[in-house]
Image (cartoon, rainbow, N blue to C red; front, side):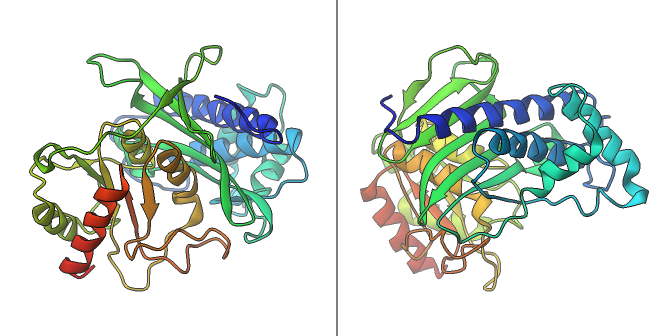
Length: 332
């Protein structure tokens, strides 16, 4: 992969940052008690969420101190006296990777994520995308992207529970990276010295062979509308339902042809950190990503995709045209 001048450092920083965060998340999940199914103040996913953001923010502050970070969390709740136990747990997990760190430093790193969006250059982060997947022992992701003048320029997407390949018994843990105009790569999470390999979307297939991804939770994406689209396109395969932007990785490396996130409420707008990294992963792998109306995703308007409705990602322009037509026909 030839990295354009000016982005060599950003790519290396992003890759290292999400790998560190993924290691923390794996450590927290290993210690998680069976049956933990809520995101309460002291839950493991909360500890992993804050710890992940702290580590990514630390790496960006160290390597790119002038770059703002727009992230999902801030440290306001962790600063409350009643959450001292949670803060101590977050600090303990961060200290496994950054020895001798103190709680105030961790809180400061987390709060770096409160920068305003919409400036000319900033990073956006979802420290754990797919919290319910994390709690169930299923898919989750750490998603980091650099946005410059509204364009996604660099993306790093760590998927700690996603198999490294489609081979049966393949080890889990993969990081996808992309730079605009220079393709999408994948690297094993547990092998930082290994070479990244290029990945690409699947070629056009017979409708009967097309697989599509959608959110595990029906509250996140309309399963009924997706089923109607599949029927119109002649898709007969069972949908792949999983949490997080791991779906973008699955489409980007050719294991599925289509990802649909369909609006469940007319007034809902997607958060930028839920899609920025994944959108670049698919487009640089050869696919197409728009909203359900066919508009490009606009990351220049703040913390939400205020001018877009939902997301549709396809393995090819030809398939995408058919998908958009079907979405219109079913009234999405």
